Length: 339
Image: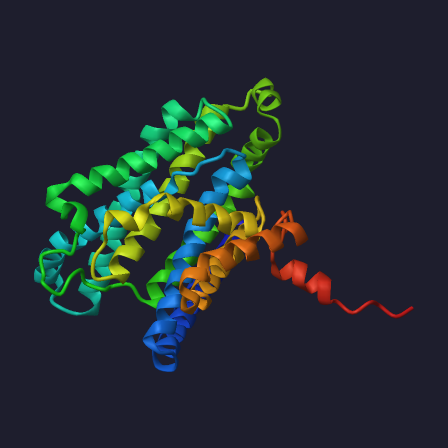
């Protein structure tokens, strides 16, 4: 009986996955045909912001820690993915031949390498620092982000302060497309959602609400915080790899302190503890900053004023702790039954 009921579920998931991939591919063709390159870039930045915000929300929102150095993990993923992609491309091309398949394999292997190295950096930072709380943790993560930026600023084999542009005069290969960005958006949102609404996620929420009580209930608080920190760092590494391959080159100043602040703004505007809110905040920051680009020196001032207004009107964020789901939408728009 169990086997009979499990087969349709796996088949349904397989069909659903194939449908999602087909929809992404069709949307990719539509975006390329229907929008100019500038608009396409904004859409890609919005997708990368969603990955950053959803990953950071696992730490700052779900677990209740305060990390302000996530740009460092993004930098690790960006440089690792860019370097791996440049060095790996000739070998993959020789094996599979030049074409879309070789580019896709090279690109995703490079992203995974970036995610693994960023996750390793998350473990190295998380093990000693996540025993700290509040402002002390924030200072440690801030220091880490600056250390990483300075290291890349002095790494001669990665271009030092001028940045890394690969081995070609044309710069890094631009593998990033709508399909791959939003493929990884879906993967990361599903992974983070599954973690958040699992037993591990409930333990992380317990740590956020009262860490002492969580420890009294035999919850391994330090181990779970390191796990959340590592997973969040890996997502930042994926976002960094996508960002690196979206451009012709990457520079250390792309990952300054204000990049970490942008990530925090995303999750605060969207709503701490809400995956849907974090995604919405990521899109909001990407679109708002681009819409204000023509205002030049007044851009950041108006952006700050807009954030102040949002915090006064919606101090809990746009969604608070609520999630957008099909069930919630059905309940909201369901017609009241007639007596």
